[in-house]
Length: 103
Image (tube, helix red, strand yellow):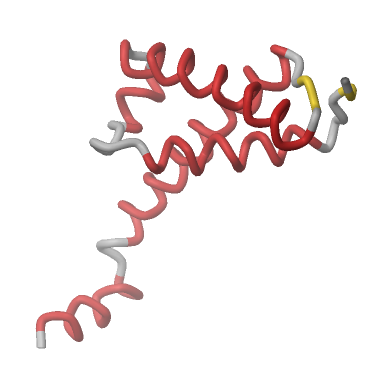
């Protein structure tokens, strides 16, 4: 059994963000960010899956603190990206792209 390393947190965060993004139907990030039953369900499911994945693939036993921090960082990261995407959709810089797509 290997002990987790501090540099594992970004890797686990990235892995969890990818797993959250794969969920079908797509999760409502606004509701999740505020807290919801969906958040609780995904937390239980994906934190267990992350610990199992890291143990099987890397021989690393993740601490509950690492997994917890990584999960909520992943949710925050995806939520922030969603907000930025929605903000950028109506800016002048993106209007020309929409005009191209209409042609």
